[in-house]
Length: 129
Image 1: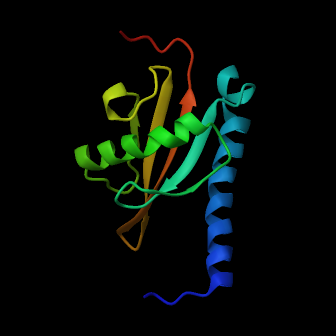
Image 2: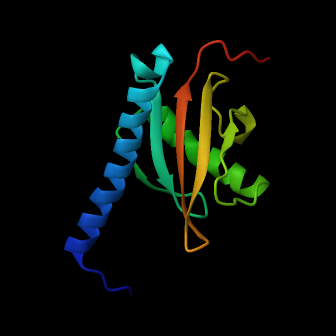
């Protein structure tokens, strides 16, 4: 069994949740789309290197439930490098519907992938079939 300090665990949990909340605040504040800026139709979360959610903001539940599938699909398709950004809305790879676009970026430390950040937001006039 792994020993852990419950106080330290709670501190880290809240730090990671606050990162995803801040991601959402910045996304909402800087967006040009009224769907994002005014309707707040977006979600942000942090993921392990295996695509598992480990922190999420209080955003849209359907986004947060489906985003891990998108992140896992991106991990299977791409060998992430520093500075990468994967954009997808494929309904067969965790997409909810065409206007919900997911952006996934890796976070590296000392040249090693340590986790991924992702957001999903509703965009108007995306097109598609």
